[in-house]
Structures are given as structure tokens and as C-alpha cells.
Image 1 (tube, one colour):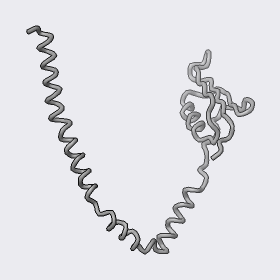
Image 2 (cartoon, helix red, strand yellow; image 1 turned 90 degrees about the horizontal axis):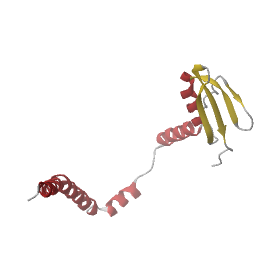
Image 3 (cartoon, rainbow, N blue to C red; image 1 turned 45 degrees about the vertical axis):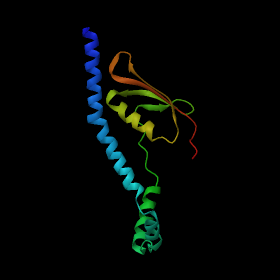
Image 4 (cartoon, rainbow, N blue to C red; image 1 turned 135 degrees about the vertical axis):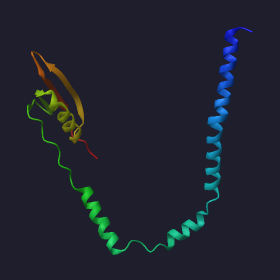
Length: 141
């Protein structure tokens, strides 16, 4: 038998053994979970849900408080120093490289989509970046 064919048969046998050792136990686990879910008493769960009296007034107050906290507008990050308005929806300027992550965070906080974002090394000044960002129209929910 040729060595290549012997190597192929060894790889085929190894793959079969790996399937029996790795995949079959997972299939058995999934089958047992499916059987367990299939045997669940759905009607009893529905009866328990209908019998629930509802939240207490304290729980309702806490829930209303939490919802109000989530509905408050989140303050956006300030425009990084060094960027100036550059026409309709655009900003341009020179920033130190350490301020570029702040520019990216500011762009992600905007309600308008980012259409273009350019960050390039400033010619002659290796410690700063020449940045330009173009924002699109206001997003509507």
C-alpha cells in the first residue's frame, strides 16, 4: 500500500474517532434537553402566570423610576478641541494622536450617522493627526 493512501486512511479513522468522542455526546445532551423541554407542563405554567397577583405598589414605583432613568437623554461627549465646523455637517482640524480615540467616541455619540471619517498623519508634524469627519442627516426613529 502506498504511504499516501495509508496516511489518508489514518486521517479518516482519526476523524471518525473524533466524531464519536466529540460530537455524539453533544447530540445526546441536546436530545435529552429536547426531551426534557418536550415533557414540560405548559398548562401548569399558564395557570401559575394567570394566578400571579401582579407587582406591588413599591415594585411599580421602582419600575417607573428605572424606566424614567433610561428615558433621560444621555449627555454627548464634547467636540474634541482642535476640530472646527467645516460646512454643512462636517468638521475638520488637527488633533494630537492621543485625542483621536476621543474623536471616535464623539462620532459614535452623535445622533447623525457618520458618512466619512478621515484620520491622516499631519505632514511635517508626526505628533498630530489631520482629521475630517462628515455627518449625515438627522436619524429619525
